[in-house]
Every structure is written in structure tokens, then in C-alpha cells.
Image (cartoon, rainbow, N blue to C red; front, side, top):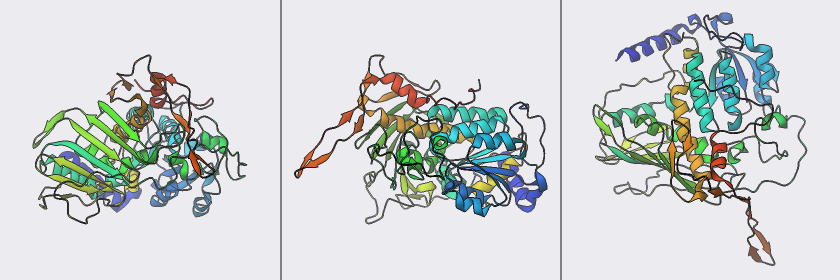
Length: 494
């Protein structure tokens, strides 16, 4: 073991055997951000608040229920009813801003599992108050938001974790170890896919204005996005298929499936992006999409070089073609997706979350385990990290220092799809978060509705398009959203 791994194992064992003796998380209001002291929660347990507790949030909170669940916030109290009843002592809120304002001194850590478009604003606000945060995947809705959370977490030195549970599994670690040991040689091409979406996508924006249920605060659900009329098609769960609220199948599942790619190949910012899809609409993600991201050559590792590499993504039922030597009859889809690393010496295959890696040659590598393994859970490892001081903390396996840049890769794929009508490969300046080859005079149009009807047995197509808009302005809005009045992100740290 190296020094970092020894520290990690020592802290992990100490946490498992006597978690109650670990120091609890820092709690500070925005006016007190020097973070020069720490206090213990009651009984040395974290005081945790949940925001978005009807779906995944409920699952995460149950995974950390050994701590004190002190507050629950959701915009849909019908959907959140099960969680409310499971944690009857927790104070209930509609608005997370009011929750943090009233209970800020009594909260150590926050679990965020709302719709994608509100992840960043909740997490960023909590971080500036000195709260540790666990954020469900995708980490954020945009590139800018990912960069912001990365820098805020570093500035305020809080414990962070993205909810891509496979990061704490054996598959990601094993896949990474095989690649770094040179088992498949140099990797210049990767193909990955998911069997999602399994929620509605490719839909026209509904025209029916439905009454807002008494159990729903629609204004708070829309949050920083542009206001629209309520319709039950948007939430719960279905938000993933709508651009204003979600990131489609790519944003939802790539945070699981591409993690061994990002980690194993030491990826950073892509330099080129190109996407295509079935009918692209202004409001809904397409039924199926393909994306190619190109990453530059990276620093060579002791046993393998890291040349320029293409990462190809497929979803909506699309899969890579089976490579030569693929076992006849073997399903490429393993727990929701799969990855093929095409190396110069062999092809490495794994499932979603990096599960069950194997080599196409049939050889089983004998490689030392050099990366940490989690024996508790993804969620409880975050709890462990929250209870350690910043100076000696062993980071989780999906901290924002890694999850932030990784999520930028994921939402870059979304950008490539949404800008496909420019009909060219886009060149990306990752450091400055901008495209470099979109001309000032270029415009972009998108289909508002497909206009498909059947009249007297005959199909008709009458697509409705947006007016042409400046392509650079459109791209910049996708990179960094203009929030609705009343909703503001903290400033980007220098």
C-alpha cells in the first residue's frame, strides 16, 4: 500500500469500528465562512437534511439513517409522503432556501436529489454555508455549474460525493487497474451505451394546462428554469426527458457507465464533440442519440501510454457493433449498458458501473489491487469523509474534484446533440468553457413540434421550427444558463 491507501484504510477501519468517535461536519452560516473551527453533532452523529426526497433521495437517506435525519424538503408532498412518514421527527419544508435559513445552524450535511436543473443551486448554496453535500447524478445541468461546484468544494473544504454508486464498487477499480497495468495496451477508441431511456422522450411540449395539485409547489419545482404551465408529464421521474429539467438518457446514465472510462484513461476536458440523434426538439430529449468526444494525448503512465482517444456514446436502443471474436449469443447489455475499451493488445469489456470486466481474448489478468475498495457503502463512505477534518480527510471515490470534471464530459455530450444542426465537429476550449469554431454569423434552428397528423388515412408532416437564433448565443446559454429572476448562483471562485 502507498501512503494514501494506508491512511484511507486506517480511517475506514476506525470509522467502521467506532464511527461515533469521529468528528462531525462543520456548520456555518454564510456570514461565518472562515471555517476555522468544527463542532460535533449530537451523539457525534451528522445532522443531515434531504432536498428532493420522494425518489432517489429517499433511498440515499435510508442508506445513511444511522445519522440524524433532521430536515426533509420536497416540492411534491404526495411523492415525498413515504419519506416523511419514515422519518417522522424530521422537520418538513417545501422550500430548501427557507430550510437552510431556519435550520442552518443545526444542519451538518445536505443530500440533494431533486431534478437535474436544481442540483447546482442547492448544492452551491449549501457549500458556501460550510455544509457537506451528496448530490445525485448527474452532478449538474451545465458545464458552468459543474465547474462551479468543483471550485466551491475546494474553497470551502467540505466532503462531497456524487451519487454514481459504481464509483465505490469493485468494477471501476478493477477496470482502472487493468488499463494502468498495460493489460490491453494503448486505448485510442472507446464505445459505450445504455439501454435508456425508459421514461418518455421525443415528445412535443404538451399544450394542455392542467390544474396544479394541492400537494405540489410548481413554482419551486420550476425553480431557476423558465416558467411553464404545469402538466403531469413533467414530474415525478419523467423530468429526465425534458431539456429544461433533465439531461436525457446520456446525462442520467453516462455518470454510471462512463466513470471507468474517465478514471481509467485519466481523461480531462474533451477537445472535440459531435452528436446526432433522432428528431431533435426544443423541449424534449430525443429518443436515441450518438455522440463522439475526442480527448487529447495525456501524460504517459509507467506501464502504458495515453494517446488521443475517441469516446463514442450510444443510447435509445443503439449499441456498438460486436467486435471480431465476440462470443456468439452473448448480450452486450449488462445491468443497463456496457463499455468496450479497444486497446492495441486486447479489448476490455465491462457493464454498467464497470461491472464484471473481462477481456475479449479470454485471458484473465493477474493484476495487484492498488486502488481503494469500499466495504461499507457509497453513501456511508461520504458520511465517513464528513466526519474527518479537511487536513487529514481521505476523499470519497466520487468527490467533486473528480465528479465535477467528469460531469463536464457528460453534459458536453448533451451540448453536442443539441448543437448538431450546425453540421460540423465542434472544437472545445475546456479551460475557458467555450466553443472556438462557431462563427459570429452562424444561426441555429430547432423543431418545436413534429406536426405529424393522419388525415383520411394519409400521414402529413408539418414541422414547426424556431426562428433562427445566433448559434454562439444559443451555445453559451446551454453552457451557462440564465436563471429566472429570484434564483442566483454563488460567484465562481477565482
